[in-house]
Image (cartoon, rainbow over all chains, first blue to last red; front, side, top):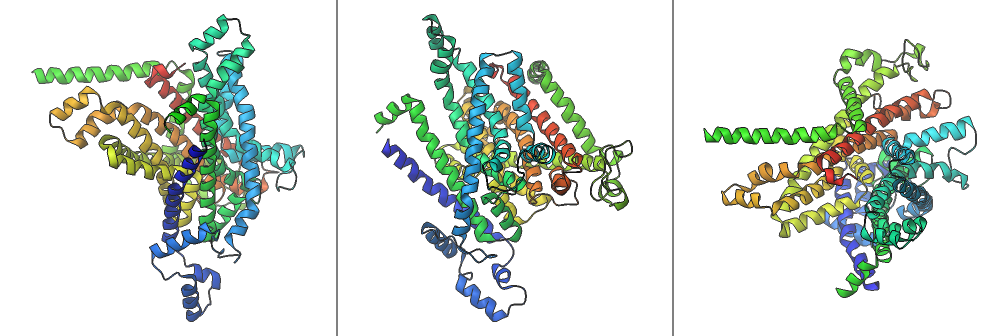
Length: 311
Length: 295
């Protein structure tokens, strides 16, 4: 098992290098000179040249890239062009907000999505089933930020129940988490429903029924565990999607997270911040996928035996 | 004479397959509803100039008329610059559908070329191409789009490029896997035995047989692309004002939403309707193309 985890973690390295190369080349192509950004408009030619030399901007692409990677490994992601603070401190100070938001978003989508999917499958073709499918359709079709705005409209502006912006209390996270969870909740509902429907047709379910197991036991003990595997994949993949969604959600609710940082940095052409936040989010998505792969083995022992055999 | 007969038979067969897909598709009432909504949206987008005047109604500011609630004169009311919301929504449809469809066509084309060559040639070509695609896929789509926008700058063309690049790996994968399932069948072997060139085999024999999942994915991707455009424009990295884009219209109205909530509600409903119609069409197509998948 440990070997498997180690092997999977090692596989992340080329992916991260690839991502950093892509992002780095995109950023290199970006028009606009960071030196003039840092020194302002009226800087003297000599000062500009000195700073360029000092920052190593005159080196060729490859040297710059290697240096960036070398520094990044030691935790030095450069200095923000705008605020002149180390990028890594900006990222770490905003990271908890994004992680919190994404985590609760995922939890919410799972906690509501899976049960609704199960009920929908168990009561196939009833009014409950069609209602939950309709709900899933609506949730995937509306823009997440619009849902967020509608929630603000109702709960903050009309009824004054929840705060519309900020992150100071847990109440601040309720509406953002709902906003973020909506789309993946819909995917989870549909996925759980369809895999459940597939599983309940299997022979072992008929066997369980024939031996007189209760319906509850059949659904939760025999069917659910087998139906869960594809759902776990979807949850894992959605995590990356939700990290992307967090950008928009954060700006709807004005939360100081990685997303709002990234958007502001793109607007002001603060390249080190953009690069670092993209890399960071991609890294996080990679870690989550790793965790999902490991979780597989727990949910489906068959995979474990397969792995042990091939060792 | 025999050649002619041969041709005729092929044509007849093709028709019957499309007919049977249509037959299955039209049983799905929700999907038909989706088609109706989407077609009317499309018509509105195409004939927008005949319905309202772009310059006069959608762009020209008229401060005397600002923030009028929906009424007989202004069906959807007016915005903070006194522009008619109905006119802006109509031209917004044109932009969303245009960017959505063009983006997917571009990425579908590039993705098909990559996926088809990877799947068809296999071996090292396949391995290298797909590893590169994996790296691209590891970056969440939204983030990928944002970093490309960061490099190229905002604006319609750049959004188009950014979103197309972000979607390529998805199509490459689907096309590749469709091709792998078709590749080993006898009729491909037969075509090769006849001396058909690789390009022709891929374009004429493999792709038409693998088209089902690709069409479904394309339909659903147009839907998700429309959502991403709106989201990008909402955070200010997409299509810029005063161009009437649905997402940026909401961003404009956000600060006044307490008193003028219709400026937010209406564009959102239009995005949701468009996306929903594409989603149900995609689902309907999937069921119609492969009845086995339907439970």
